[in-house]
Length: 88
Image 1 (spheres, helix red, strand yellow):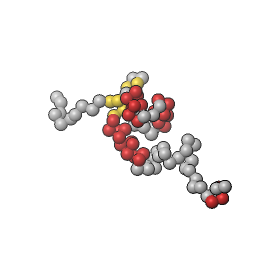
Image 2 (cartoon, helix red, strand yellow):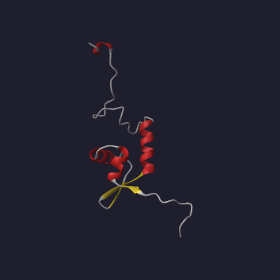
Image 3 (tube, helix red, strand yellow):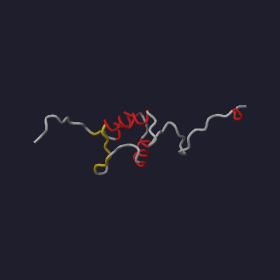
Image 4 (spheres, rainbow, N blue to C red):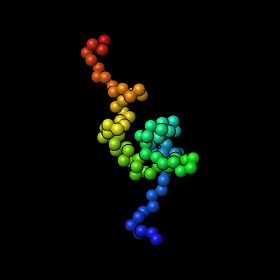
């Protein structure tokens, strides 16, 4: 019994996600561990739906408060505007 309206959506591997997002495996695993990147574990391997990755990227681009990787430094501290007294 299959529904003819359903389309097959393959799951991406870690290697495919590395190419798709153009990041290192360390970054991928860090995002998985933090719960930021939508992934599911099948046995000992991670799998990703491209649709979920695209949604995640859109959230990043739109400045989602959940996880904005580009607005904070590695310590989770928002960047401080440069004040006049900081300039020399």
